[in-house]
Image (cartoon, rainbow, N blue to C red; front, side, top):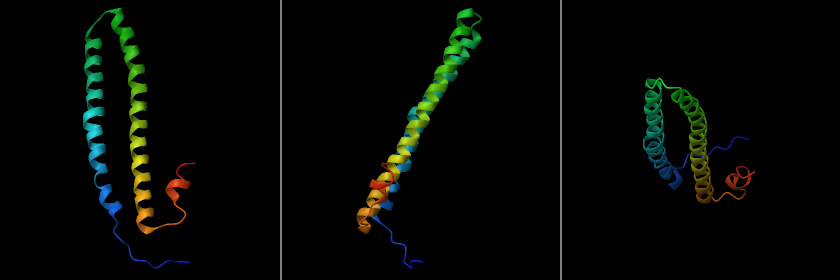
Length: 107
């Protein structure tokens, strides 16, 4: 069965426009500085010819990998939270009886 309903702009659609600002700020103020600091440290250790610098580079590699994973998880969490908030607002405005955002996304 195909429902023939017109698209209806909701207040939830308006709030979605603010999500870009949050992600942009997170990227510019958190991710970029972290990667810049890693590059600075890497250049410093690579210029140093001591045995200690080699060990510090290995540690930096592990730190970069784990921190990159954590930053990816942070972005995923922000996206998931924004999606859930959008669905909740749509469901409230459209008065949906069996909301997806509270049933499917919480499982």
